[in-house]
Length: 142
Image (cartoon, rainbow, N blue to C red; front, top):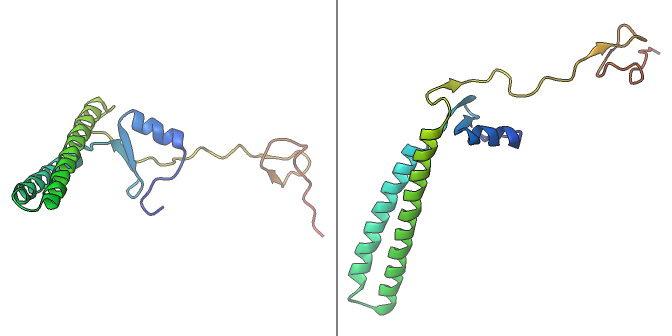
């Protein structure tokens, strides 16, 4: 729904455990490579840190409140860079440990088959959801 995968959380956990992901919009399962996105996040965090450090340096000679605010911004940007670097390292480890890297799978049927159906012995034309004579009823018209 809207590009998000809905379904059995156990199936999703199993895919993630082997380093795979499922793209609901394309219907493809494959090894989940988050390294490019993590590298982009690191580059953006580095840029924000440089800008925050530049702002902190410019504010250092002026108003004390502005300098303190700029220093807090620089510290937050540094923390964001550290988190992005750790996320990149996790993504690299996950990529290296993913099962069957390079393989792309398009499942034909994701869900389990419906329960078996059978014909009731009491009503040969009635197909029942279970193979039990006690749960089936004779089809009658009128």
